[in-house]
Structures are given as structure tokens and as C-alpha cells.
Length: 315
Ligand SMILES: CC(C)(COP(=O)(O)OP(=O)(O)OC[C@H]1O[C@@H](n2cnc3c(N)ncnc32)[C@H](O)[C@@H]1OP(=O)(O)O)[C@@H](O)C(=O)NCCC(=O)NCCS
Image (cartoon, rainbow, N blue to C red; front, top):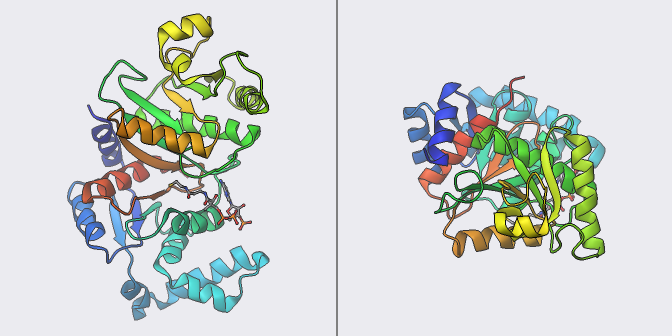
């Protein structure tokens, strides 16, 4: 079964309420119909008109007041909060924050930053999570790497320069995404570098080694190893030469890149030269919110909503 079919199947098990704050965008409206018809979620289309409807006045006031309380220490005024709450993106975030919806998907119109910033400011991180990051689920054309051809890459979207502790958090969150969304019972996490097990020495390598140690402390049962080069992580013959005895090398299914430049370049090479199809989700937020690419298709929106529904945690 393809990754998308697995995710759609999981989403159907419990129907979640997912907000689409770009409700007047044609692809989004078309996707909402499919999502509802296929029982993947209960989509809520938010538009400036739905927000301004007289029947909605009390809710808008409630969201404005809650937003003011959340952000007044950061300098947000009551007038500013009222204005922001009437913006569909902020209104949608407040629906999720106040428990009127389970998650949010946007980005067919807005940029990544436009969606990420309110998510970080309003939804914030899940208990125990230090930061929000992303996973790219990469489905390779061949089944002989990762988990039957499936690899999870992180972080390719959010954190430009994670320090060792942040990198460790990214590793743990990505293993959780691999379990929850991809059905990987045994995430095997490779902490990537240009060095394998001391083959080179540099501050950048030391950061990856330290992150590996921190992640082991955060998730004692997790199979994680580093620092590993890309080939040592994936190719059994290279692993046998360079990282003998590693529980991960040569059979990794989760790859954690040392920074955003490496991660973003790495996923694009895998997609464009390796022929992978890919799919991104945010992780570490208290409630799931996901970003689309502005070139997304109706199907991409449907799949991202399904993935968001699967990411919802029981309260
Ligand atoms: C995520 C991002 C948008 C935040 O940048 P920013 O607007 O400068 O925001 P700030 O650093 O002022 O942070 C805004 C808030 O989010 C929080 N925050 C920032 N990054 C965070 C993270 N990774 N996890 C959790 N919280 C985070 C900050 O603590 C701050 O909270 P506060 O306002 O309550 O104090 C920025 O890191 C970014 O642009 N990342 C790269 C995104 C990108 O372009 N990717 C390209 C590939 S698609």
C-alpha cells in the first residue's frame, strides 16, 4: 500500500475537524468536498465572509479576547488582536487553540512563514517538545532502501541552524512522526554528517555527535546512531566498512540532517534526481497545523488534511 493510502486509511478511523483558512481558494474548496465525501475529516472552510457573518460575532469577539490574552505580553493591543482575529489565518489558528477544531491546513495562497509564524505564536509546542520542526516523507521508486523504499527526512523546512539540543529534539520528533504517520514500528535514526564515527574532526561533526548523545537521553529505547555519512547510513556495504556494529548504519529509515541547508538541499536532490515523491508535515506543535506548497494540487490538499487528522493526539 502506498504511503498516501496508509495515511488516508488511518484518517478515516476517527473523523477530525480540520480548518482550511483559505476557504475561498478554488483548489481548497474542491479538496474540502472530496475530504467530506471520502470521510477523511470534517473540513471547515473559513473565509472573510464566514468570519464577518452576524451569527459569528460572539465567536469572533471570544477569539479576539483570547488572542489578546495570549500575546499582550509581546505587545499586542486589544485593537491589534481584534484586527488579527478577523484574518482567516489567525481566526483558524484560534479555532484550533480554543478547541473548536482539531487541526489546520493552509499554504495554497500563503507563504510558509505566513503560516508558521502564527502557528508558533498561538498553537506553540506540545508538552515536552522544545521546538517545532518538519518531516519530509520520501517515497523512493525502489524498495531496497529505508523501510520498503520509505525514508523520513528532517528538518528540511523550519530551523535554519539547530544547536545540538535542538537537533536532538528534531531527531526524537521525527522518529515519532515515522511511527505515527508512516507506520514504522522501528524507526532507525541516522544523525547525518560529513564524517562517520570520527573519520573527520570539526566543530560541525562534534555538534552531531553531541546531539546523538542528547537524543539517546531523551528517548532511551530509540535506535539512533551518529555521526554517520549519508552512504554509511543507507548502504550495508559502506556501513560494514565504516560503522561496524552500528544498530542503524546501513539500514536507517529516518535521516536527520545537521541543518536546514543540508536538509532542504537533500530532500530536493532525492526528489529531483532520485525520483522520490515527497510529502511534508510539521511536528512538535501542540495541535497539528500543516503547510502546503503554493503549487499544490487538490489531491495534495486532501492528503495533507488526512495527515493532519492522523497527527491529532487524544486530549
Ligand atoms: C519559523 C520562522 C518563520 C520563524 O521566524 P521569525 O518570524 O523570525 O520568528 P521569530 O524568530 O521572531 O519567532 C516567532 C515566535 O516563534 C517562536 N519560534 C521560532 N522558531 C521556533 C521553532 N522552531 N519552534 C518553536 N517556536 C519557535 C519564537 O520563540 C517566537 O515566539 P514568541 O513570539 O512567543 O517569542 C523562521 O525560523 C524561518 O523563516 N524558518 C525558515 C522557513 C523557511 O523559509 N523555510 C524554507 C523551506 S520551505
